[in-house]
Amino acid sequence: MTVEFAIFLGLAAVAIAAAIAMLVSRNAVYSALFLVIVFLTIAVLFLLLSAPFIAMVQVAVYAGAIMVLFIFVIMLLGTENVESEPGHRWQFAAALVLSYSLIIAFLIVALVLPVEPAEEFAAVKQGFGSPASVGTLLFNEYLIPFEVTSLLLLAAMVGAIVLTRWERTI
Amino acid sequence: MTHILILSGVLFTLGAMGVLIRRNAIVMFMSVELMLNAANLAFVGFARSREVLGGQVFVFFVIAVAAAEVAVGLALIVSIYRNRSSIDVDRVSDLRG
Image (tube, rainbow over all chains, first blue to last red; front, side):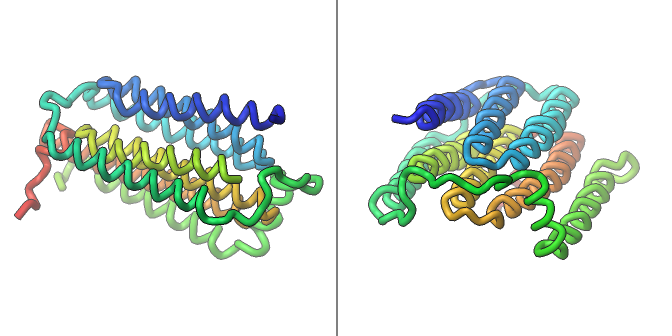
């Protein structure tokens, strides 16, 4: 067992434990903080998978901006624990059945079907996943999708402002 | 590669389960983010094993779309709360036939 695999196992355990804690905690603020832990462990996993630029984007956008937005809305609305009744029983049973079948399907795909690449990764060339290489690809091959993304963000900004205006109720 | 796919699948399943069993709209929304992140993990894993950078660029796009989605979604939740004084999704079932 290599050092990288040991690190992976530790991070995976932390991520899964934090995800489960996010699901079961009754207070939405705790859920948000557990989700931050999941995002940070996934960022470290990105570093292990030689994607430093994506790891930094993950920390800045997900663990930073998006979670600040979540916590801001939770505290603004004051809806930390709104779930008074536990919901319908059949919903919980259906969720268990569906999620178990989903995980079994994933395991079939991951274990039974032959995965072509070897378990151990070959060494990547220098600069794989660095900001320079990702940026070069982004501004040459993926230039049009990149510009469309900026348009999408503008549309989302306008949409958020229109939805939360005081004057008119939707 | 296989263990990364397994972790991605487990996280995705936990997110799907969160959407199904929780009734708090914000927590359901956070579960959707968890599912997006699980998919991102699989993308980066494949980019690493195939040594193709396109997977990482795609993760970049997914993160940008997720940011836009969170902005609009949380605006919707704020708007619903303002009209209903509740974000329990069971109380926002007017479209049920």
